[in-house]
Amino acid sequence: MALVESEIKKENASVVRGDEALEKVMDIMELYCLPGGLMAMKDVLEAGLVQETGHVWIKQKSESKHHYKKADKHVKVSANITCKVEKNKVKNIKGVKARDMMLWVPIYEMEVDEKNPGKIHFRSIAGLTKTFPVEYFARGE
Image 1 (cartoon, rainbow, N blue to C red):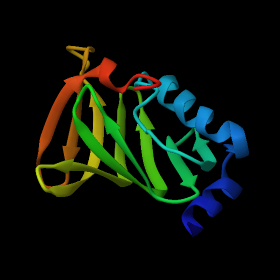
Image 2 (image 1 turned 180 degrees about the vertical axis):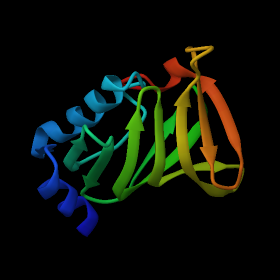
Image 3 (image 1 turned 45 degrees about the vertical axis):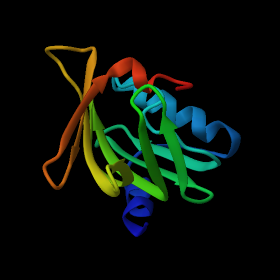
Image 4 (image 1 turned 90 degrees about the vertical axis):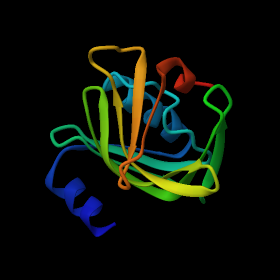
């Protein structure tokens, strides 16, 4: 986390701690035209964004799991997540895994399709890509 702390000192970071941190995560996703429920987490302690670079970090109390019922996908989110956001895309994701068959596969990138904005693509480092309707990941799903 030294990188995060040095970025905070060097740049104007927007940081929220405590009860508003989870809401901040959803707001960041929606600010970049992504579904608000994309990062399903519990007990978020801190969320931050360096708007100039798109660097985002999220700290939770502990690892959390979530089942997106409409997509029938289980997701595991570590206690510390980092990524870069830009319009319609989250990339360089560290700390998010999805269950595919019997394996937990790290998710590296999530992108809303510009040609078909009703679809979102999830990509793993292993080259796997899954596509779902965007509404499956709305706030509260």
